[in-house]
Amino acid sequence: KRQPQMSGNNSWNGWGAGRDLRVGDRFDNPETGWWRMVVCTDDHNQYISEGELIEDDPAVPDMAFDKTDGLDEIAPGDPSTYTPSFENRASGADAGAAAAAAAVVIEDRLPAATTFGTGEISAPFSGSCVLEGGLVRARLDEPVGAGESGEIQVRVTVSGDAEPLSTLRNEATLDYEDTMGNPFPRLDAVDETVVVGPGF
Image (tube, rainbow, N blue to C red; front, side):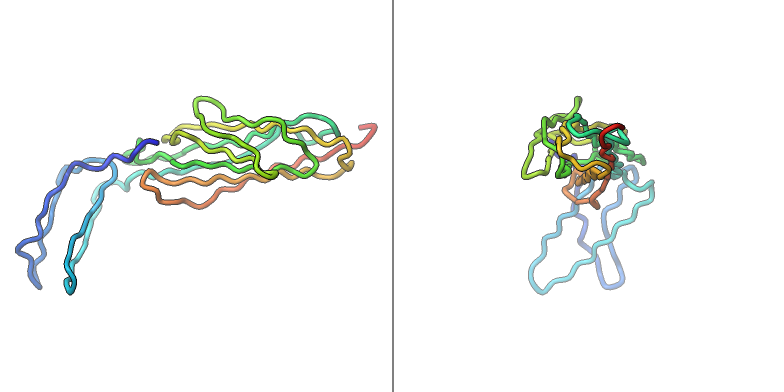
C-alpha cells in the first residue's frame, strides 16, 4: 500500500510567545502534499494552533461510481455481466499522490434470481474479488490516482425459473479513503433489468 508523502519542512519556533504576541513557523514557498502537526505539552498547559492556506486548496480524491449490465431485458437462463465502474475526478493544486483514493472497496449485492459465476478486477488494478453470502466484495490493492479509472466484472446467470416481467435489481456500493486514512461518503449505484417471458 502506497504511503502518504509528508512535507519535509519542520522546525520548532514556539519560544518568545506571550499573551499578546504569537510566534510560529512561516513557509513562503511550501512543499505541496500533506502536512502534519505534532504537539507535545505537559499537563496544565495551553497551546494555540493556527494555520492559513494562502494558495489553492489541496487536492483530495473525488470518486465517481456507476454500474450497468448493458441490458434492459434478459431471459431466464441467460448470462449477464455486471460492470461497476469508478473514476477519480480529482483536480487542484496537487492532483497527484495527495488526491489518490485509497482503500477502495466495491460491494455488489446480487439479485436473488441469479447465480454467481466469476468476479474479477480489470487491469491495471489488482486485488481480491470474492463472493460472501450473495455479496461480491472487491478490494483494490492500489490507490486510484487523480484521473485514473477502472472497473470490476461480475458474471452471473439468471435462474431458469426467474419470474417473467420481474425486475432484477442489482445494487452496488463503493467506499474509499484519502491517503491519510480519512473516509469519504459511500457511493451507491443501481442497475435494473426486466426478465422477459416466453415468446419475447
